[in-house]
Figure 1: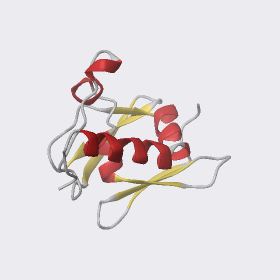
Figure 2: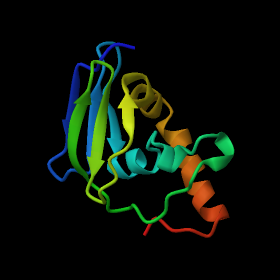
Figure 3: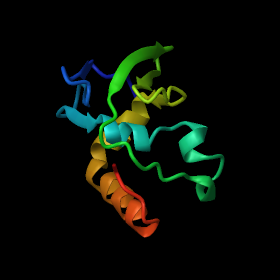
Figure 4: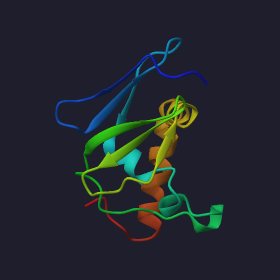
Length: 116
């Protein structure tokens, strides 16, 4: 997957717009990015180690740092900074955003956790 044409953080720092050359722009909420971070802290080292991250409704993007030509590190205002978001991972999140979000909400509910 080639690099996006543009990565744009909204003024309120709560949305990342990702523009690929051959797609409509994807708007990814900071909360979705944070709770689906590709970090080992969130994803674990195996599917059964995946963590459901609660309490991130108001998280925002503090900054972004390029990682080579293949990814970006997103640093959140809760100081989480270990997720490296590859271009293909961002594309998948944008493409499957509704399902990923629905799965996250279901996971919160099943574990009696809250977005707040």
